[in-house]
Length: 79
Image (cartoon, rainbow, N blue to C red; front, side, top):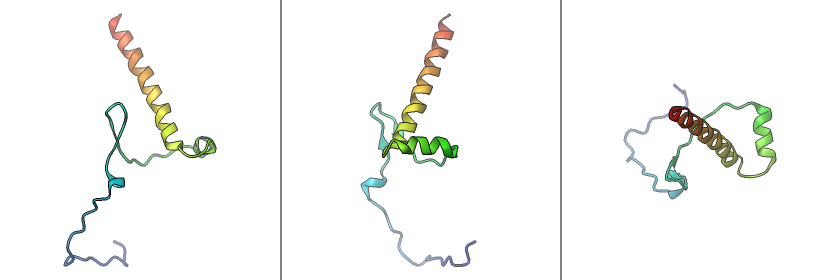
């Protein structure tokens, strides 16, 4: 445990009602979730080099790949 940590058991609980921390909804009805992911440095720098919104672009690329894989699997099941 962190030696500088001082528990505050006797303090009242603090509720955060900040709307910026509320779950983000995808236009298709999905909910966005904060995750930690390890990416290659050069790939992350490439996404960031296009300017703000790099996380959205990464999500779009991953969604496109997912959609392609789902379509291919569905097509394979129909054969």
